[in-house]
Every structure is written in C-alpha cells, then in structure tokens.
Length: 145
Image (cartoon, rainbow, N blue to C red):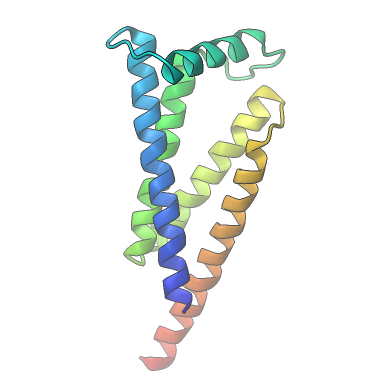
C-alpha cells in the first residue's frame, strides 16, 4: 500500500514537472518572439511582466525571461526527483527537496504570499509521505535481507 501511494505521488510530481517544463518553454518562446500564441499565453505573459514590473521587492532581480527559466529548472528538478523516487533512488528525494526549496525561494524573493502557497504546502506533505514510505521500505529491505 505504501508503495502504491508513493507511486501515485511520484506520478503527480512528474505530471506537475512536465507541465512546468512545457508552460515555461511556451512562455520563453512567446517572450523571445519565437512564436506568437493568442489567448491565455498572451495574457499569462502580460500578467507575469506586470507582476515583475510592479513588484516592490525582487531580491534576485528576475525578468520575465529569467523567471520562466527558473520555473523550467523547477520543472526539471521535480520531474527528475519523481523519476528517482519511482526508481527508489535516494537522490530522488534530494531533487524533490531542492524543488520545494526553490519554490519557497520564489515566495521569499518577491516577499509575497499568494494562493499557490497551498499547493506548495500540499507538495511538502506529499514529499513527507515519500520520505516516510522510503524509510519504511528501506527498513523492510533490511529485515528481509
């Protein structure tokens, strides 16, 4: 049961990462003028540009382009972590923790809290479940060895 729960969580993290990678690639291309999409892509880019321009605090100095690149790195990190955990590799949890820290760093960078903090909190809980499932799996392997 623990393994099945861990697999479901890993698949959620993997899907989330793939979405982050895809959306950030779309937005980077849109911002660079490589392609032009209508609708939500234009609106999302404009909203991000406005948010960054109007931010009272931007510690790192993100531009829309570097912000979307950071989102892409976050997507790669969580996807890699999910795959690592599916393969039962310890580095998977390390990458997931790195993702959680980088996501938290965005809140700190802009000194703002928005509704996405609930998704971050849920991710922390899911990562905690993965840690728990990994530790019990390691203990079970030592007992049977």
